[in-house]
Length: 101
Image 1 (cartoon, rainbow, N blue to C red):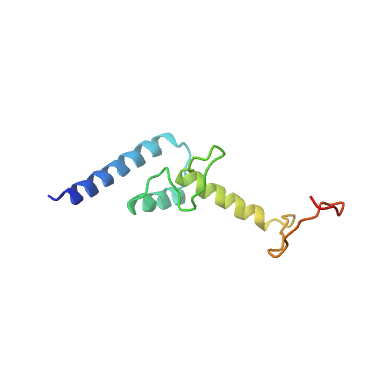
Image 2: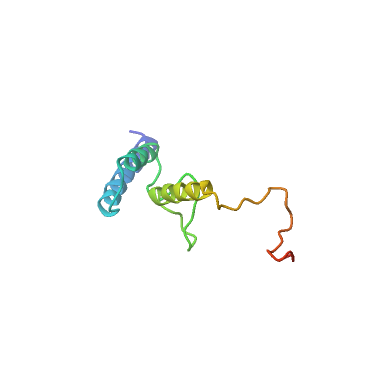
């Protein structure tokens, strides 16, 4: 067996073990989230990474489920009628009293 094949097998084993441990400790996870997570790991990714490159408040990458939930929350917030959208061509934002920040 070549070293590349051994390494690939080792990585897959590591990711499966990481996934198993993660699922034991995460608490609640929906069946849809679990399906998506299994696909993410099957593609060779860690449960502790995410496709959005999102980080937490400390600068560490969010895990897959945390990032997916955060993006869903952001999408939901953006659909609310009181969500403020700033035109993409505005260069200076004014405060409510009309003065520049």
